Amino acid sequence: MASILPASNRPMRPDKNAYEGKRSVYVKNPYLDAMDEDILYHLDLGTKTHNLPAMFGDVKHGMGIPSISIMLHELIKLLHHARCCDVTIIRIGTSGGIGIAPGSVVITDTAVDSFFKPRFEQIVLDNVVTRSTELDKELAADLLSCSREIPNFPTLIGHTMCTYDFYEGQGRLDGALCSFSQEKKLDYLRRAHKAGVRNIEMESTVFAAMCGLCGLRAAVVCVTLLDRLESDQINLSHDVLVEYQQRPQLLISNFIKKQLGLCSQMSHPSPVSW
Amino acid sequence: MASILPASNRPMRPDKNAYEGKRSVYVKNPYLDAMDEDILYHLDLGTKTHNLPAMFGDVKHGMGIPSISIMLHELIKLLHHARCCDVTIIRIGTSGGIGIAPGSVVITDTAVDSFFKPRFEQIVLDNVVTRSTELDKELAADLLSCSREIPNFPTLIGHTMCTYDFYEGQGRLDGALCSFSQEKKLDYLRRAHKAGVRNIEMESTVFAAMCGLCGLRAAVVCVTLLDRLESDQINLSHDVLVEYQQRPQLLISNFIKKQLGLCSQMSHPSPVSW
Image 1 (tube, chains in turn brown, green):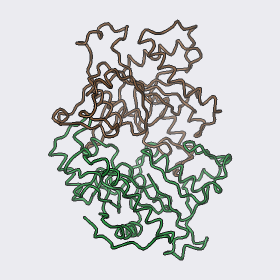
Image 2 (cartoon, rainbow over the protein chains, first blue to last red):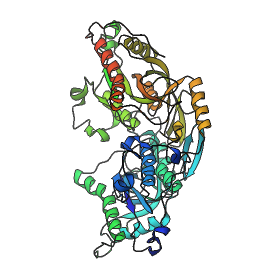
Image 3 (cartoon, rainbow over the protein chains, first blue to last red):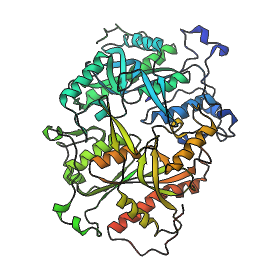
Image 4 (tube, one colour):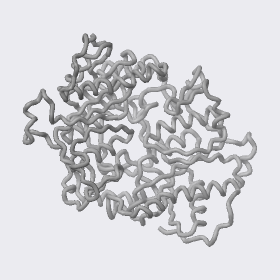
């Protein structure tokens, strides 16, 4: 799931209020402008059949699917065709934690791969291209600050590990295939923790890489549903699971309200749990 | 999308009719039997809360999502818990063709990666494990034979290339990111064709690898919606697109009917188009 937030009326950034100062969403493809029509196939939209600036110029919608790279290609082209400016995009979702209490919200500073490296290896034709997975540190700090205003809301900033696979790639012992021991699993997860990884999910590296290349201010905010040092399966009651799953939405909706200047006074800030 | 076909009453294989002769679906995980309960999280099913043999012992349902490896882990565990035997699993879907007419149905003999190699590189913890992507050649030949009984049904057997990405990974010039020339794209696709690749999609290598390891008889049958040597975007009318998309279903439903002995006499076989 992703939240898209245009920052044009962000009160804390007066330099961005003039149109000239806005950062356009740009694509890095010299062929795009030469095309007679561009059909965003998976979105069922086209530049000839739809007035994209009118339809999406003030885009604020959310989305979240496993094939996030396809969606990002088409979403970024959509933002480009619609001439959106100063766009902030936030991936929100669930994840497995490492060494932190279930229910903690992790704001990602850097997405890392299965080898704990801050990189995304994109295959372009038959070449492997390595891309940076840094995320916007100022945005992460703003989100952490926002989280402190919500009572009993454990939040931290840490690395997020992104894997291609939910089972073998995340060291789970409960998949259809498992060729490693409990000891090897724990050794791997402890090494990840030592490298700064606080949670594991499956989209953040390509999300960070593509947003970074295309000039989108980006963040990843995921709640953890279990501590992978303790278990592989989720053992929460339905009500607790639902409450945890809503935490990223709660944080981002508060953040959006603050950006729009709609924030009511919040009660006593709660301490941040680590 | 995948079609799952239990082969227990396959008339052409009398040796499989006795229960003793049936191939069980097996998982390769020594930890599974020791678990008190196994929760198939993404399917909302558990071994304690559901009678899986009663619910799915005669499983025939279909599925198809981008995160096919998660689904395969849980589906294969489901088949294991339900003690299914002699299961055939067929992935059906759409793809981009290389050097063949749109509407052609490609039955995959071997799935290959972006480097045209018949392998799937699975990351297990922080190790890269290379797995075979061979598919069942006899099943592919049976499917080709079945396709010949359908009039005007262009079908061929060939390699299928599986990529992680729809745009840069498949040499498309119409993504949000494109760093290569039209010439480099065509050179890559022509090299793929020379290596035996006839279509491109995004699931076949992990599908072939996991099915192969778990003893599932597997096939991949995809229709092509365009010739990637000609274009990147699909330019078919809605009606033609719908008819093409139904072709794999048509072939597999005919194949299932044949396996069940329900096949009516078909009219003149049509020649196979290459």
